Length: 481
Image 1: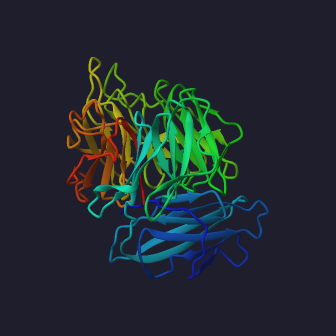
Image 2: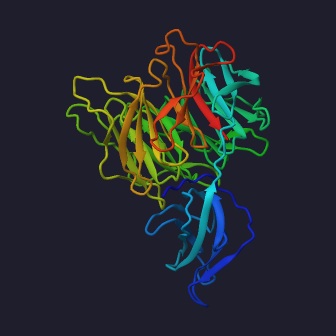
Image 3: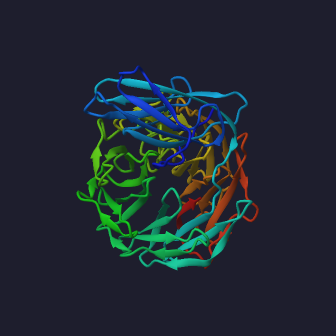
């Protein structure tokens, strides 16, 4: 069974299921989607509301159990809207939605349904940053996964754009510039992919950026900087951004990658020079960050003696459900996986970590993973290893978080760059090319098709794809639905 969180919103639905522990019990829970006994497609939309007539402190949390004992998703609120991925099956799924109040009361609702098929959104647009060319490139994704330039082709962004990120719905794009130290925001035309600057864009960061991430709600944007901090921005109703009070929030030494959890309530940062992982909770009202218990975390070394298997994180990501944080070691050949505590965002190492990509001896250079991504089906982890010029493919156990190395694929050899990202349909992986490795090949992006059975990848016909206008140094990439 596989599960993948795709969206969070508060919307109404039509069917209603209500279960009370007893007539006078507290709390109570009402599940309005999915309808009991219904036939649905995956991802399955859950909508639930809880209330507590006898507890003045209100509801503490609502949790979905897609299978016995497995925490598929938790929200620390009285309302929940989540899309969870299920394998199609003729056998009904018997799931549980559970709520807690702040007085110790608990209630459960049993929800059964049959999954007849899947409806993942397809990749629609791809955007890449061109540092030396001072522009952001736009592509439309064709049905076979190959990208074609949008009619607009690119937008100028002076200042050396390095990383790009979009909101979950593909309505806005954000880019950071490494020479002018700015954050630029754009509206995405959902029909053409054309970019239009949001009011007030770009805005000053005050330090050199290293990565950018957007909360799933689209309400907050976070940028890590070389000044050992995270600059947070709140997105206004007109699309402009305003710096969050308290920014920059301090990190350990040289943060290189920032991610926001699938539920949008935690932020995690890889500190390359510090060899640590920072963890913060997000204030849902103003976006301010507060360190979680136990942070910073130091990924342990693996089978390497004097090496850093599993340590020195340069990149990191969460699985699609936000249950696990995946942290490769840059110098070594190990990948640590942490279980995320949904109650406070703290991390605990998954047994078996680090999971070894390649044994590294003290005198050797490690694989140097520059980027990691998880497919939309939450089954496979793809690790781009720059020194080895390959993509390591792991299977992911969505219940335990454990990884198993499946293969090292050299399909992108001599054509790899800084970043790879899986598309929202679970069919493709895209990455940036780099002149250091792509000898005689124009700067642009490469595209890979995912074998749904094995997780292995093959080149999309025509890959690598050049940038629309003579790219010089393509760094970051974002794929939107």
